[in-house]
Length: 287
Image 1 (cartoon, rainbow, N blue to C red):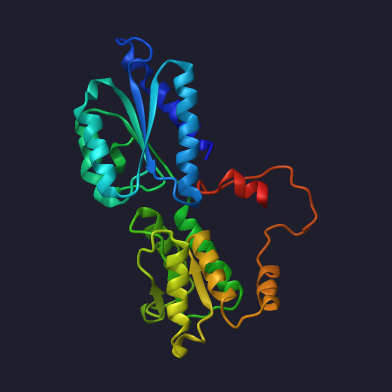
Image 2 (cartoon, rainbow, N blue to C red):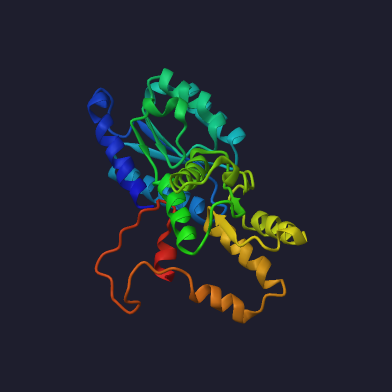
């Protein structure tokens, strides 16, 4: 999440030449994020506020963080920024709630307000952004497909995909998964065996309820491939399992067989490459 600090400072540098006519501190960088409700979205808002504090302390620009729980709340935030005096806006950094924010972002473009899109990229306006900053979500989907195949998944096996939302993040993770399976020879009939949950809004409780509903039907008992697009979903599934007939020994067996990307489990790392912008500092320290 520290990446957003560098992102904001880069935006300030990009805008610097165009703001010479105004005195220091007169222009504002607005940072729009989801509310601090859980996991990585909470971390985005937390680190955005830290970045804003640093920018305000430097005195060249003002910075203000606005959080929203939904697109319906985020859209008027953008409209207010434009209406209140677009000339005093240095730029906007936004993590869009979903694709319905596209028209409001286009209003930023029409008002000549530079913006940076973070994490969720809206195709219709992405070419208008100063930068589109995101993780390799298609690569995430591909890596999951590769891993499942390495464990024995065959073409036509039933797969359940726990989807996050309706944004580019989910679309890319879906596409990366299915595109790789096609490369491995899966036909359209094989792909039809994949069940997509629909938007679960990155909710642990929603994943738990969905999993429990699936397992309550005996015809789903043989399904063993579950693609969780977020750690919150995985935790929800684990909570469902903990409340089932599966005992602690089985849970420990699953945990013990979780993949490790380095050969020597006792090796001390020299460098850490974080490829996912959703990873929090707290998670790194915990691991």
